Image (cartoon, rainbow over all chains, first blue to last red; front, side, top):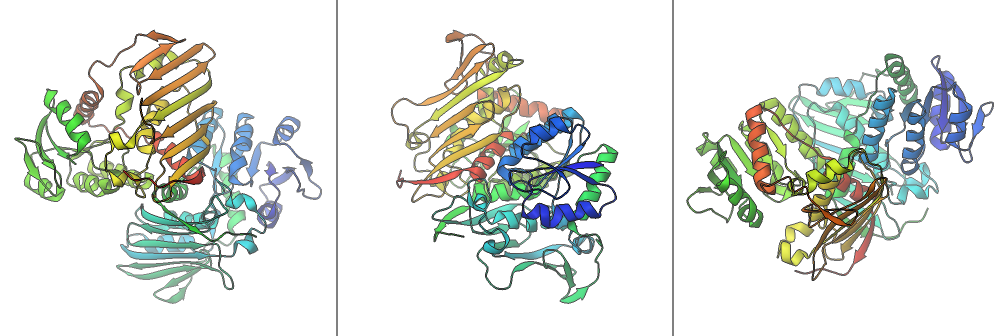
Length: 303
Length: 303
């Protein structure tokens, strides 16, 4: 199936393009981007132009920042195209609800992806936790924003989500592997004095689960989740890629294909089956953290 | 039907008790409150005690502040009671999703009320707007927090929602009367330097709709909504109680019974029919405003 990729930045070139190139399902038929292009692929700068010029492309994949995403997604859906969204699926919950309505009215597929759920050990962790009672859990997601988002000021603008941009990956795994849903009970958000989105956050949830998100980590980076249950302990390290049971490395590398190849395989399945997949639970936890959270002003941040 | 009322404060005494007393459907059989009581009605201070002592009471109505609400609501649902919630239905979206799950598992009614939707002219406004295209809209919701919430510090604590406590009433009307859903595109939130919830907020939404919420209004209070459409203009004034079409007072005082009597009549209907009614769309717009909003620090506020 022909596919157009919208937003040719770091994540598109590092992940989406290689996944598409390696897939038997997909042909990258066009790109839309203000600056980026992919060699040998027809490039547009405006999505409206691509939609008008290429009615032969039935599927559009968006890897834009959250704020401009709604306009592009709704244009593609209204043009009758199936749409796949990078995480988070929008800047607000209400806009994603509206995309759902448009997709339903148009009879096309909408897929809100959560790439971290496709990390190697996530499926095994979910199976192990099923039927166990969580007594406590601790999420530590600490990375260096200068390394992963160099100069990307949009991430600290209002709606850019700040440290929740990586933190929502942890929450997407959490909401996928827990046998019972959690809800947020309290949060603290650290806002740099010169920015409109938080650089660090600490969350308290039910089932004794806490989260520590920080964008200021230098040196080793940490993407860990640890759970104590009535039947032993489980840890997921390296962003869901390594599993430990009771402190020992465990197998369970189910997903051989990697995160983005798995997302595109799922999208092909959804389009062929005429189905949509929209799960907003990670984004609801983020919205709740902003709603409930106590705001703390911290020192200004410059890239 | 026998009903227990939990949280005997200003709103309970001003609205809930008179509505229950006047209703043929209901008997106020118990109260739960740290301080408040209702003359002639058995009073408890802890909901667990009431649930244990009064298995004959099938319905619990909660008018607690949002933060303690979840614990009380989940205790009542788990005890197999039908539950009616004052607005907003919780401090976070994720906790209300969890209440929905518990209610479904228990096979009992959950009703998230929005009292302003029962204001006199709201149904007529909804009928008039149906089929019209909204070109712009302006919500002005300005009231004096010292008058309506004297000394209620919880409203400015994290999770207390601040000016969104009244503002969500406007949003509950908006989401009910519009022919097509809106979503939030931008917001500014004014936080007093000494408080964790905003005292004023300005929202921009799709369909050209804006909102101006302010808790610092002295003198005349304003609860107005004005819409320009392709078929004339409509205004709802006095919190949904007065309707104007093209600048002239219009009829349409459908709801004769008043807001709270209408809510309790609806709850009786839901319990008899074994149904639930949970609409979170006003709360989603609030969560989106907190998520997307630019925070502005303003002068400290004391009651």
